[in-house]
Figure (spheres, rainbow, N blue to C red):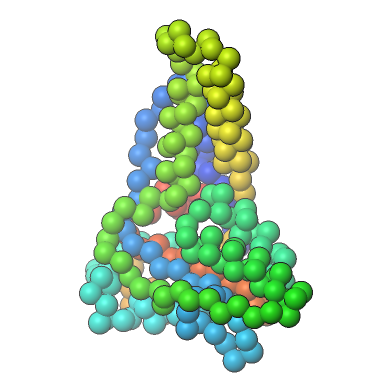
Length: 249
């Protein structure tokens, strides 16, 4: 069943990040193994009769079709965990705002593409211009590391935070130029850290552990409002998606 939930960093991740700011290492795994599918208004071939619009219902239909596409050699088999995250809105301005917040926590290409095209459409609508995007249809990829991009960013932030907290033994660090560069790096890292710690976005979420055939039947239940015409949907498939599920409140 789809539920409207708040997405933010899990408590354990927040604690690790805050410790990293103090130079305290808190080792824990952020890795997520599996595959993912993504669809949004500007995905090639996803165009409704009324124009470049995509309702939650039709976005889910695209994913349903992929779940039962037995010709796809990379289609997951057996019982799997499924986590779906949907950003949807009736107005493009609201859609852009939600995607900007989502991109901090889940900076995947699909969300970034949707955000870029949404901003372009908003601008082009004012100038009455038309832009035709070219993005391939969603398709399963071979199983690989699908660790959330936010986790990779977080790992980099933690490394920088630990380095910042450690005292440098290099005498050259006292030079004004190096001190200025260090201060700049610290400022940028602090901004990234603050953004991650405070990041939060409202999204529609779906979680289920079953075979893809069963998920394909159930994922269509209680879909968000069909009046929404802007939709970006990410679906993750794997054996253990705990790190993603813990982002949901």
